[in-house]
Amino acid sequence: MVEWFDDLTIGMTFKSGEAVVSREDIKRFAAEFDPQPFHMDEEAGRNSLFGGLGASGLHVASVCMTLLVACGKQVAAQAAARGEKVAVWGPSPGFGALRWIRPVLAGDSISYSNQVETKRTSGKRPEWGILQARNTGVNQRNEVVFSFLATAFVPRRNPGS
Image (cartoon, rainbow, N blue to C red; front, top):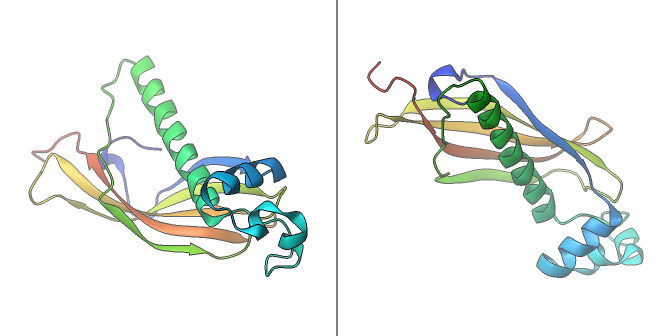
């Protein structure tokens, strides 16, 4: 992952990590945040459209966010270790086009990545750029299971240029 808006180019892709979604994780998340039978009971999952114990889409999205934040912290720590100024990204003004494309079942391994789709300098805050990136999750069969378009404020290294 690149830290500064100035270094990002359209089409750049970053891997943010991989996670295996366990049966226990699915049930624990569902019990707290999405207590539907097909997320909590294996028999109900098998008899649903999922065909097995399915992870909540919100669970899949939460894992994506966890890995994005961890990746950003790692990049910042590496920059700091090199003695470089660390870019601290701003908040996200939102996201769109959230899609759960295929079920994520117990035991699936999901690889998460994001690809820069658009970027522009903020008109009101020229020290910031506004980035849009497509975040995706792909299972061990190379099937896209999850996708959304995220927007983020990214600091510019050289706001005057």
